[in-house]
Image 1 (cartoon, one colour):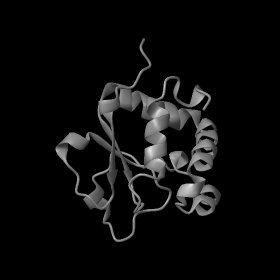
Image 2: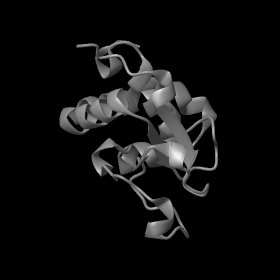
Image 3: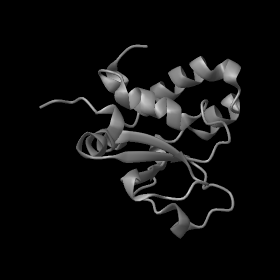
Image 4: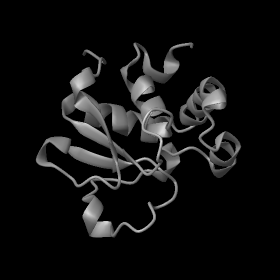
Length: 129
């Protein structure tokens, strides 16, 4: 069975953007609920907090672009400690569109971007990088 996840199956969207039918399964990947957003407004399929960066990692990173590569490395290490939650997300992405929903202001340096990279790289979290 092919373990590859098609790139078009993994999308990223800020929690403050409205849901759309093409979003597929919307997965909140932040540990904290986005400020000012009502539960029903997010139209989530899941909120696996185990896949969010730990509080310590989130606070250390503080969305500092200078720490981006190290954040990605540490985040991957944390995700490797959650194989069941990670496997569920991979399986969902193999079979249909998932949208990784996040609350950060920065659209290029955030945990959703990092997670999408992990999902799409050959070997996923088992790959060295």
